[in-house]
Image (cartoon, rainbow, N blue to C red; front, side, top):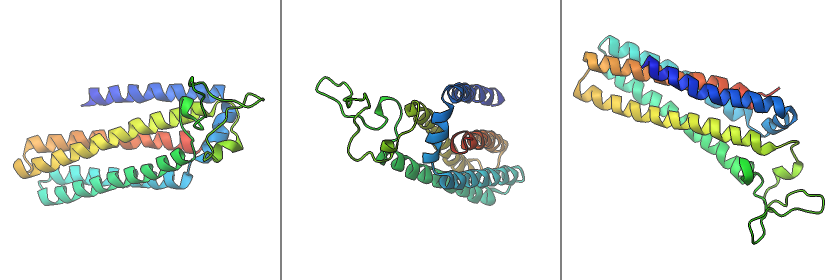
Length: 213
């Protein structure tokens, strides 16, 4: 399990290095673009994940002491926090999509001609879809880079949250089949380590994306 977690650290470490490089190349872009993220929703999700990490730690303690009923309740509570995190993230994503703050070539939903080429005005500025209001305010540099990193990093983290939910549901099933036998204790401890890593990654993502200075 520790070897797997080391691989996960390297996986996200590559993304963090990519972020650092782009942050160095486009400082004005990152400064302006991050202001379109909701610090409030990001803070709520941070509190949710930290709390879920605490309930998971309690679940590990419960299984180690043979308290199966408490373990089940704590796992359900951790799952509820994880689902709450995804719901908040869903609201964030929907607002970005509605405002056309998208990654890569989809940033601003540019109008395209019959050949698929981006249409531009006389000054060379892309012509965006009518409902894309925020992008009209303008973000210097290449804002698609920032939102590309935002969706990639938070999307992959969200995938890990979903996997964590699946693992916790699997643990719940084991509590009914194996109760608090040694196999269950080891499984809960390993899933707990995984969930703490998911929490730790978000603690890095939150200031990197939402609190750019």
